[in-house]
Amino acid sequence: MILLLVIGVIFLATAGCIIRALLGPTSSDRVVAIDSLSSLMVAALVILGVHYQAVIYLDVALIYALLAFIGTLSISKYLEGKDVGM
Image 1: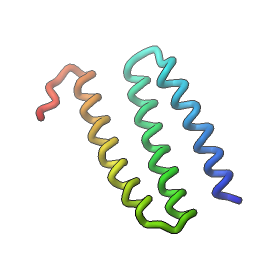
Image 2: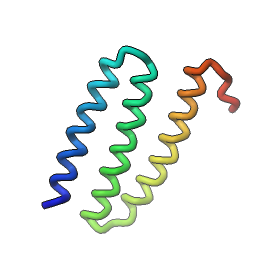
Image 3: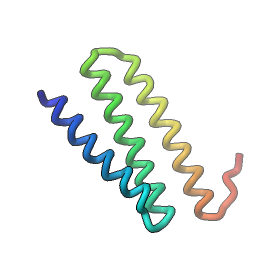
C-alpha cells in the first residue's frame, strides 16, 4: 500500500516537472526541471526494483543516474558558454 502512495507522489512530482520544463521562462529552469525528472525516474526504478525484487532495476537506475549527471554537467557547461572539453 505504501508503494502505491509513493508512486502517486512521484507521478505528481513528475507532472510538475514536465509543466516546468514546458513553461519554464529560462533555459536554466528547463534544465533543472529535466534534471529533477531524471531523479524521479531513478527513484521510480528503485521502487520497481523493490516491488518486483529484481536487482536489474537497480542496475539500470544506477547507470541512468550516472548518464543523467553527465548530461546535466554538459548542458550546464554549454549554457554557461564554456567549451565542454570532449
